[in-house]
Length: 490
Ligand code: NAD
Image 1 (cartoon, protein in one colour):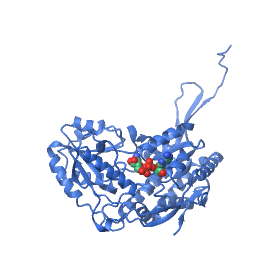
Image 2: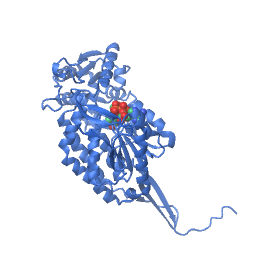
Image 3: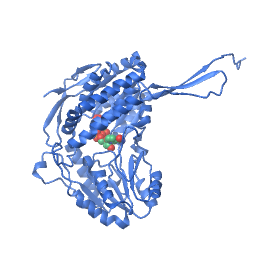
Image 4: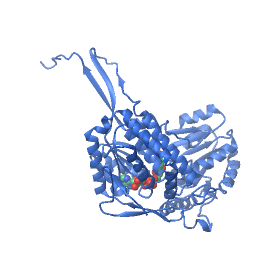
């Protein structure tokens, strides 16, 4: 089995400690790879390389068009390697191969988008209020960027960070989740092939408490971009204050899916299923809180339960599998404890609430699609991110009540509203305190539109123009064309 190594200063290296970690397939716990397990020392080496590469200025001063061409080449190589990457992602996460293939298409599109944007942000000329002067605003790279990613969309989340950072002329140190490094390692091989210069892009493998924490605390890092859980995000924010780093946080969600009685019933049922059970609910924007208008509530729930009970769990490589396992034993334990809490809080368990009995699934970390009805917003299962196949259902009777329930969590990542009354849908969309709102849809995201959270779902935006701006500093340059003494001080 080939060992997955780190990429530091243009070289593939083992951890200084020589430690490794076993990477398993969550479908059957089979070992799929051995990966180098770095620590603070490897991270410091990578930061040093990125700092040197940035301070030399070659990459930042490379014409934006040329940087864009390299990012474009990465997009092309990802397309050429779509199948291999997709298979690695399925081995690593257990998600279906169809999902992984779609992820790889999205990832190539992210690189394509930022390749095109690289030379479009030329700054602006300001109308100076002073005579005989020039005033302009230029955008420059922030510097050395630490980028920390989670396990649910390993390469997609990395792509949202790597592509804009490189396009804008930064140098980077990427730390993927220690349990899902495979596709990120492969893309570093592709980045090397695409001609990313030595030291510009570095990869450190290993856990958060040392590799991640070093990236957040090291004063040679100018920006830390993190996607993951809210508690880790808070720690990183505190640590990053050491040198007042730029900070970008993409955290969790508890996303409402609001269905009015006038919505297209079958479409709304179908999409409500997809909203929460896609990728076993391990999606930051999962529609895990369903709010249904009371007049259709019972009929809607009945249909939803019937459809959810038929979801086919299995091996991500089998064509008829609709959903894979949870990522790990620890994560399934967490989901199970939330379900126990839901029962104790008095929510009605309408479906699931246990592991599947199918003998074929006993080696994987599977959990059945679970639906709680009769939920109220004071319940922990309504307020906290479960990050698994667990749906809570609440009723509402007016659009104002729907908005009030929908906004009643600490999160503000995404939400959806279903109605054929577009004025009503627009009213709700305007009132939701969330970074993304879908009307009569759930889940679409794409490179051209910004993504990020209100409230405790995060700080900053990825994708779209704001996703590039995140990786730039704004500099105002003022030039006095006829300098003369002011004589303020006599
Ligand atoms: P996590 O917070 O446990 O870990 C995320 C990353 O942070 C991992 O690489 C981990 O090693 C690292 N890390 C852990 N402790 C650290 C520390 N002290 N300092 C620095 N780094 C540290 O999250 P997870 O379980 O991997 O991912 C699931 C979470 O990610 C969910 O909450 C989900 O909502 C969120 N997420 C958000 C988005 C978004 O776009 N907002 C997208 C995907 C996932």
